[in-house]
Length: 219
Image 1 (cartoon, one colour):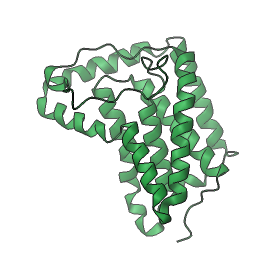
Image 2 (image 1 turned 180 degrees about the vertical axis):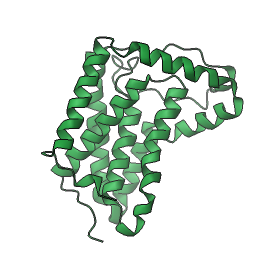
Image 3 (image 1 turned 90 degrees about the vertical axis):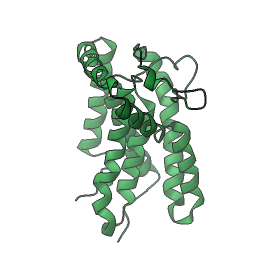
């Protein structure tokens, strides 16, 4: 399996990702994705009757909280072997959070307004984390910062994964996918919010790994 992280900021793939993200952002601004987004949320709402699934999805979503991933980046920074990766991941998180504020305000799309079933109404001690952005953008959904950060993490881990552990790559990339599914299920984002967030995370991860010269391991 090829190293995805070998992609440079001058590669066609990098510019393709930027182009897709820009095009998707324009479509969201003009309302070109509204029908699809509403259809996906309506379809997901049918599954809310399964209380067991609701509980699994709810707890799964907590592993993608920004506060959790911030803590992970600090831990990676402390460990000598992963210090460089941790510093770059922490930098990426800060960049994503700052960029997300401006993009959210530019797009101006409100978070989905859906009523969750009783089994998904979390208690005071167990709350679904909101967007960690400016109060002006907290009620706006595009792009999904939780998914951007999760996607960025997967990219960096993929890049630094030793060859003997490359079989873990599918598991690593399943993490942002599961985070996207859980946040969609809980009605925190629209489908295009998570797609836009994932693209943003890849773009920032690629850019910062190139700028800070994070390369694949030799072995």
